[in-house]
Image (tube, rainbow, N blue to C red):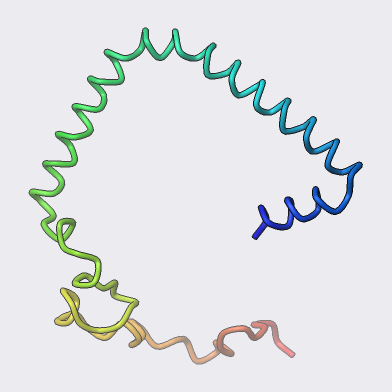
Length: 115
């Protein structure tokens, strides 16, 4: 949506188009410089990144062992606030309040000050 509005505006207004074209060229140049400048750093850090990735994968494996619900498809798992069913069907009703509000509470969206 934003992209089509941007394109339409560029096509409709020649002065805006020239400014946008210059800005786009500048962004492309800066991006290319940033990528080429970062490449040596990424090459040097690759072993550390690989080690961190291994640890993260092992941690996720352990988490999936302890929480098998993570391997269930989304349609089988519903949140306690969603529709009933799925793995939460045996849970209590989540639209029931845990405690009743105090007698002085005027209700949601109303001011609590004395009138």
